[in-house]
Structures are given as C-alpha cells and as structure tokens.
Length: 79
Image (cartoon, rainbow, N blue to C red; front, side):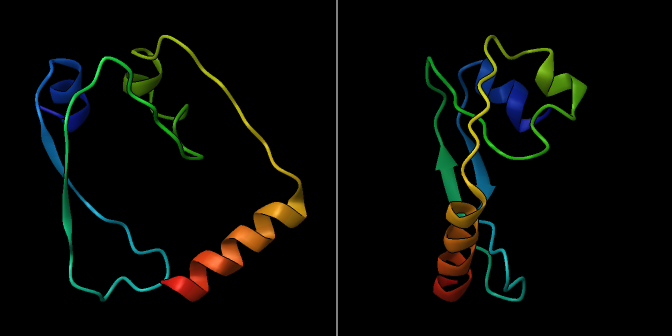
C-alpha cells in the first residue's frame, strides 16, 4: 500500500527528507500526519496517474526565472 493511499485513509506515514545536492548525507525521516487538506508539490505531480486521479484541485504557480534561479542557489548553498 502506498504512502499516498495511507494518507488518504487518514494514516500517518514516514518519509525521508530529500537532500538535493548531497545524497550521501544520513537519511532523516519525518512523520507526515494525514490532514483534511493535503498539498502536493513538485514537477512530477501530474505525471503519475494514481496521484492525478485522486486530486480534487490542481493549481499551478510559476515564478519568474530570476526568482527560481535565486531560490535554487540559496537552497544549494544551504544544503
């Protein structure tokens, strides 16, 4: 059973914290508790049929290139 299905059924799941530029760091796990509203983000959100078919709403937010570039640079330096 997928974590997504567990969340939809009201169960808590554990997910690893993703480290973009340092995959060799020790894995840290975070508990995610099911909520009435679940926000899902990422560029592949609409790619997976099982996920797309269970979403009630789809909102796409885009930022100017310079804003995205600055965010990536800050994230990469921080991690």
